[in-house]
Length: 413
Image 1 (cartoon, one colour):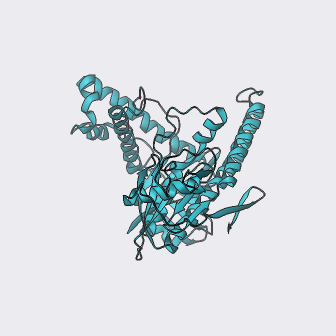
Image 2 (cartoon, helix red, strand yellow; image 1 turned 45 degrees about the vertical axis):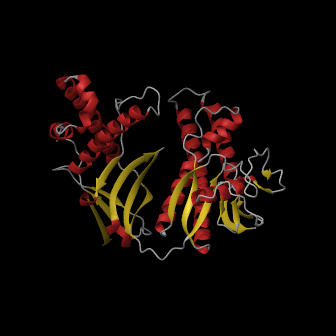
Image 3 (tube, helix red, strand yellow; image 1 turned 90 degrees about the vertical axis):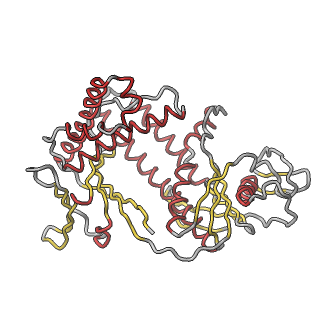
C-alpha cells in the first residue's frame, strides 16, 4: 500500500535562496499576465466560463512562459499547474457558493515556495563535505548544493518525490515528500465511534469501553499562544513599522509562537497515536468519526467562545486520524453528528445536556462526549435511536502530562 509522508528540515540560509523563491514568484506573476492576455484574445465571457476545460489554454501558457528563468523546467511547470489548480478551486467555490464573492487568482507575489521533482534531486553521501542534497537549476545554471546534518536518514532518499524550499518567519526549510510502500496486516471487524470535541479532542467508544483523551493541556497552550500574541503586539504597535526595534520584536514573537505551535502539534500527534493503538488493541477495522463541516458557520457565542471555536483544530485532528488509520489498514468514515449528543443510548429519547454530564429522565447518566461517541458508532451501524439495555462501563481517561510547557509522556488514568 502506498502512503505519502512529509518531513521538515531547517537549513542554513544561502544568498541564492531568496533569488530562487523570487524567481518562482515571477513565474506566477507571468502566469497572471498570460491569462489576462489569453482571456482578452478570446473574449472574457467565454474564457471565464470554460477556459480550464478547453484543449489549448494550459498548453498555450506552457509554450509562452519565459524560458530565461533560473529555475528547473519542471519547477516552472509545477508553478503553472498550481496556478491552474487555483483557477479550478475558484470555479468550484463559485459553483457551490461556499464563499461569498470569491476572487480568482489575481494577486502578484514577491516570493513563492519553489518545488523540485524527483528527476531534479540528487543526494551525496560519504563525501569529504558530508551529506548533501543537490537540486538542479535551469539550463546553464549552477546546481543548488545544500549540506545535510549527519543525522539525516539516507536510507529513505529513494522514496523522496519532491523537495520544497520554504521561508518560515526568518528560517529557510526543506520540506520533503516521501512515497512509501507499507505492508498492511490483518485488521479486525469492530467499529470505533469517535466524537471530536473542543475540550476533549478525542472521545471514542468501541462497543465495550469509552476512552476520553483529555485536551486541557492543548487548551492551555492555545491560551498561552493568545497571551503571547497580545503581549508582543502591544509592544509592536508602539514602534515605528520597519524600525530595528520593530523587526526585533516581530522575530521574537514568531519564534515564541512557532515553539508553542510545535508543542500543540506534538500533543495532537501523541493523542492520535494513542487512539490508533487503542483501535488496534480493540480489533477495530472501521472508525466512524463525526463530521463537523460547517460548524463554525454563523456562530456567535460571545468573544471568548468564538475564539475557542475558531482555534479548534478539528480538521487537523480528523486528517491525522485518517492518515494514521490508513497506515495500519483501518478505514475511516465520516458520519453526521445531528442529535448524537442529545439522544439517550438507553431509552432513545432526546434531551439536551446543560453541563459535561448527560442525564436522562430514564435514569441514564454518562459523560456527554461519551454519549456522542456511542451514538456515532450506532449511527454508522444503523442502530441510532434503538434503546440498549446493557449498562455502560465508566469512561477511561487518558491525559498528557506536561512539564514546563512541554509535552511529556502519556499517562492512562
